[in-house]
Length: 272
Length: 163
Image (tube, rainbow over all chains, first blue to last red; front, top):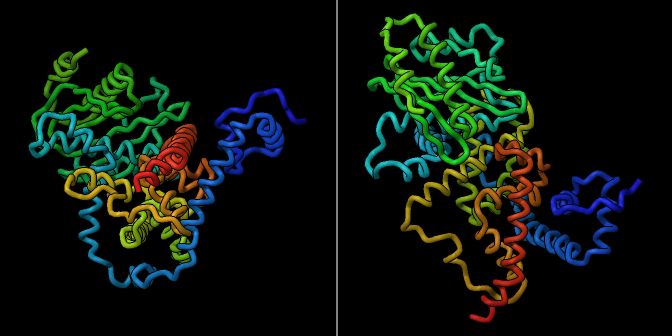
C-alpha cells in the first residue's frame, strides 16, 4: 500500500533520483512530486546534473586504454616502485591529516619524532577504521597474532582486554612506522565504533599521557621503555582516557620488562 | 589469481573515466590510474576477497585525496580552473559548465557524487570507499547537488554577462 501521508524528505528525493528507493515508496514520491513543484524542480535539476556529468565523461570508458595502463605493461616495467613506495609513505602521513595536525601545532620546523609517531598512529587509525572488509590483517582468534607482531615490533606485545568498555578485539596488523615496524590493534564496540591501539619502538624519553584530537578523532599517547603507544578513537576525551588508562595498566604490568616502579607516578601525572 | 588480474584489467576503463572526472585532466587522471594499478598489484596479498572494483575505487580515491593535499601545500600552483578557456557558446559549453561546477566542489563531495552518478556505485559502496557512514555520503551528495545547482542557475549568467 502506498503511504501518501508521510512527507517525503530531501534524503528520500536523493535516494529516489539515484534509483535506490524501494518500489513501494517510489510511487508515494512520484505523487508527492506532482503536488510539490519545487521538489519536482530539484529532482529535475539533479537528474540534469547527472546527465551532464555522464555526457561529459561517460565516453572515456570507450577510449582505448593507453599502453602504459595495461596490466601486462605495469607488471613488466615495475615503474620505479621505490618512488611509489616513497609516495606511499607521504600518503600515509597525508591520510592522517598531517597538514591539519601540523598546521595546528607548534611550528613550521620539521616535525619531531614524537609528532611523526602520533601522526602515523592517527593516520593508521583513520585509514583502517573505515575498512569494512579488511580492517585487520590477522584476526584476534588466530594464535599467531601476538607472537608475530611481537617478533616484528621487537617487544612482547599484549593486546589489552577492553571488554570492560564494551570493546572487542578484532585483530591486528603490521605497519611501517617512522622508527620501525608498528603494530595496530583494532577494537570494535557494539554500535560499530572502533578504537585502535598503535605501538612502535620510539627512542624518546618516557612521557605522561597526552591527549590530542584532530576534529573527528582523539588520541591518548604515552611513551614507556623505548616504545610509544597511541590509543585512538572517537573524540570523547574522558572515555579515551579511561580506555588508555586500562590499556596502560594491562600493558605495563603484564609486559615482562624491568620494573621501573613508576607506573603509578605516570598515571598520576596524566592531566585531568 | 587469474581472476584477480582479470577483474583488475576489466575495471581499467571505468577507473579512467572516474579519474578523468575527478581530475578533469587526461594525464593527471591516467597517472592516478597507473599508480592505483601498481598499488593494487603490490597489495595483492592484502586483498582478502570481495569486490575488486570497489577496492580499486578506494585506492584511487585515496591517492587523489593525497594528490590534492600535496597540491594544497604548494601555493605556487595555479588553482584548477584558471587555465580553462572562457565559456564558449556551442556544443561544448554544457560540458564546460558541469566541469567548472565539479571543480568548485569540495573533494569529498565531488568524489561521492561521481561515484554514485558516473560510476553507479550504491550509497553503501560509496560509504565503504570513503570510509564514512552512509549518512555522511548522503549529506555530501546533497551538498554537492545544491552547490552545482546554485552554480548552474546563478553563476553562469554572471559569467556570460562578463563575457
